[in-house]
Amino acid sequence: MLLRWFRSFVRDELRIYVHPEYMLLTHLNRQSSLGFKLGFNQKIMRQQVLTVSLSEPVNQWNTLKNSLADALNSSTWQDAVKQGVSAKVIISSHFARYAVIPWSVDLAVESERQAFMRYRFNTLFGDAAKTWDLQMSEPEFGQPTIASGVDSNLINALHEVLAAANISVKSISPYLMLAINQSVQQIQQQKTQQLTINQDFWFAVVESERLCFALIENGAWRLVKNVALETDLNAQLNTLIQREMVNSNINSTLPLVIYQAESGAEPVLNISNSLIIQIHSNGFEHTINSSEKSLKKWREVRA
Image (cartoon, rainbow, N blue to C red; front, top):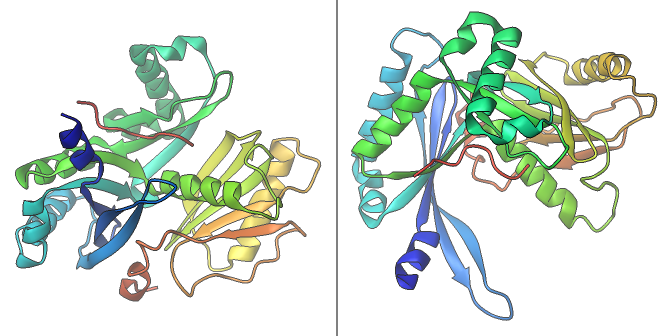
């Protein structure tokens, strides 16, 4: 039993990034490192970019399923599939919408969570939210948290094609959550103590044509916006910060943590004299740049 558990823990990972114009498949090998401290290192074994068009609603999820199924059945991925991999899916913020959920003891019950999230998303996004899969991050006691809404048809399509390939799904999460988790990890590891995760700071995640902008207060989500990326990122961030300082009654200048995965695309920023902290990704997305034209837990799959 222990050996079976250990094998499942070190199983290789297939990470799938879903973007409107492509899917990035990455095979990560988890290698154990023994010594004074037991740990695991991830090594990229192979990557593949699948060019797709998921921007148009008509047949978009059939296109996703067909493209992903063809790739997993190809010689490129058959060895990894046969050896056994678990899938971790990252969904671009193009396909996700977000809402901050206030703390309430009543939300400890899953049925109450779903009812409140449904009300919250319907209020913010209208009838379109009625068919979304809604998931909420596990909150700290007394703290607000964040929830995501993703088209249920997208979630079902991913589960269907991965189940057909006999690949277990470890998690499905929006890109924003990968970004905040990696950012928190790097902030904790910083030796300069420029910023701690319990401080207040602005948080920006830059994807191609998409910008997620958030305010973190005392380590918790205060607000989050998911907007189209403008040509002048400096001007856009300055405008967002100035507007939200007024809306949130913030009188002090806060640091800005910016996460941008695309290699060679980091802008020179001058944001309202703020301390700017660039967060570098763990590297699985590095292939994305060449193919483009231009807090604890999110959604763990239940047994």
